[in-house]
Image (tube, rainbow, N blue to C red):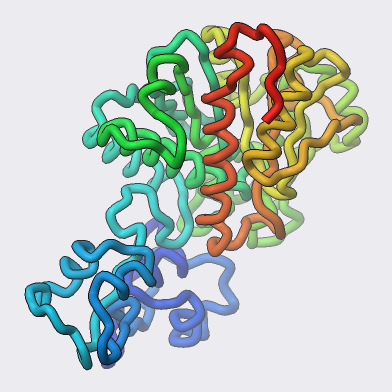
Amino acid sequence: MELQWIIVHQGDTLSRIAAANHMTKELLAALNPEVASQPYLLTGQMLRITPGTGRRYAVQPGEKVAVIALRFGLNEEELREANPEIANIPDWCGRCIHIPDSNGKTIVKLQGEYGYREMSRDIGLLEKKYPFIEIGSIGSSVMGKALPYLRLGQGPRHIHVNASVHANEWLTTAVLMRFIEEYAKAYSTHTPWHQFQTERWMQETTLWAVPMVNPDGVELVQEGVVNDHPHAEDLLAWNAGRSHFTHWKSNIRGVDLNDQFPAYWEEEAARRGITSPGPRDYAGTAPLSEPEAWALAHWTEQHPFDAVVSLHSQGQEIYWNYRDLEPKESAPLSRRLAKASGYKAVKLGGSDAGYKDWFIQKFRKPGFTVEVGLGVNPLPLDQFEDICVEVGMLLAELLSDREHQQGRSGILES
């Protein structure tokens, strides 16, 4: 196909441009070798592209459309809609057909990095499609970005889940957003989510989700400090002059938000030994000095949460304890969550000042830090679907907590 040119706009990345044009990131980089020396794209830069059409498949003799659809995770109607010119022809033998993404009809999907822009767009689409989802904000980030929440259900048991407390763990936002969409879709169509009845979730629980606690940091990891970033000078200095920020966990002021909560904060700050802003582990000048941490803590105090989950990456582990302050139900509940997700429940020591730590200390209720996936942050995008299943099953188990439903009359092991 003949080469074409596109102009880079604010927020564009190689992954986003490649996904939008049905190309691989590797092919886009190969067509534009000059970008190899750049950590991030520059607004106004021109890139060569060869737009593709996605996956193609040559239909073999005797293959039925329904069987081909099943092989690619689709139903027959979706496959015929993707090939309108032959949709009404019974026999597709010898045809070269287009295979759409199996998640093509979902709102939440990965098309390169999943950042604040993608999350905000998807929240708007979810609110429009599922008006029973309540949308609001818990506060604002350093750079003035709203910190949105989504609420599903009207039940007496309140569950809170947050994600992207650490900047380079942004895949957790997409995972949480996908679960919300699947929950809402199952409820609106009166179908089970796997074996779970979402009508019961709606009646018995209220789910509160904050999908991106650290939007400024996420944007920094994905887009860097090019294009006249207002904090470029400080960030480059805190990053030891490095122009790449994929390792960055902190907020835009170089403060690690999961070291910001008033749960033995002084001990955590001393243990870390980091006395100035940087990519990770700097606890700030005081607990809740950062607007993102303050907003999450203040909002938590305003709601009667029965349990909380903070999604992080990576390790496939569930941390459930804090200084022996956790309630007696935390350990057995963590084992049920571990069984549902395939993760490992771990009793963790030597860590303070995290959101889960503060919640357990202040409210004496179950709190969990869940480390999703395996590898190096940011996690590879090809883990997304598997992580969605793992986290989805964990959250489903929490929403369906049988011990709570039976009035805590006894512990029911799975």
